[in-house]
Image (cartoon, rainbow, N blue to C red; front, side, top):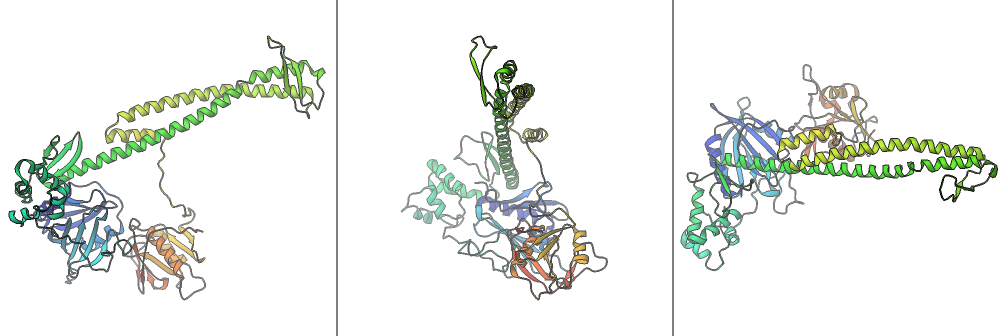
Length: 567
């Protein structure tokens, strides 16, 4: 239930009480789908988290968060439009799980930019965060781009007008009276599903709560009991726990879960923070434990394979005495052996049964050399036997260490204990921590170098100094220059030695994908990339390294990627 329409109703009330009139000081990305807003007024600083996660979509106040991941294009885009802006309105759109926060941007040289609105849709896998121009509902940018191939009802793309998701014809829970309510459920059976389908603002959990309470009080009275909690004065924010597992954050007691314990909080934000923190910690524990378990299983498999190979080697090494006996018998019977023989039958003097032993020979060697060959095999096998025994002992010790780790892993139930185990795994060589590097990237030189599908050479800067060098040393006036639009990233140059009047579109797209990939927007699905001839790109004196001014640009929207060809 944790983030249903009722919960959002109370969160909206909390945010209105706390954030209206506050100034957005900073926007920080916590993970690919979650953003934290630092908002302050004259007396206090608050942190608002908004997430479009497919399972954990939510919005509520939080304590000061830890430093997040690198900023994405969307985080920087919101900062550009909203930073230092004042929050003037916060509302829930109808009974939908949609939150709208309207911001008055900071004025620029006596020019007041139009109001902007953040629209957060909390709808499972369809959750999204959208920034619109509040004057005409035009979408400026959004976390997830939805085109016509993904939705037949509405497109969510920059430049399109924002349209609400499809609306359902349901009754308002706060205005429906007893007669109308009773009329609705005379002709159909009152189940949680029919309640959910007929009454707006009810989640499956709330609908089930009404049915549970109706067993003692009747349906209408149960409905009134539950809807009374739509009044912020009546709510009892709490975290429900079942066998140490977080079950829900709720603004009311849930009678449908009789065997649960609960902890009350001062606000819904506090209850939600506790719930999602517990959920994410539990998921982290499960994920880390699964990864460490797989690592141990993989290591066990490797050790078993080594043991099989060593046992086979040991079986061969145990034949060392057979090689010595063959050599001794050949020396004792040199007079019976002629060069060119492939084998010889000799009575085995070393056996109590004195049976006849067939000994293979190399026809190209003399009888004496054949004997020496067997003595060499004997010496080698004898040395190998000792080494194999030592390796088997070491292998047994490794297997004991693994068993020890298995015991520790089975008993580890906290994130701290699992993190310590992961550190031990790294120290023992079970896990390797490597920085990710593009397979297509060449490590030589100050630039990344690629060749497009049309045969054009593409240069990509590695840092601000490298970007400057690209403009000063590589780029010619008729080369093409590309850069992610209004976002930090690498400069990209398409060499044009033939001074062609245009660059083929496949090459432009590949270069644009590189510009998007090597920028802070690389987490986004589609990134705007500006391109123009290098002669229109100017680095003015005194500017910070990597910063330029450009004109005559056009824009491509591409998915960040690295081409399959490289130099």
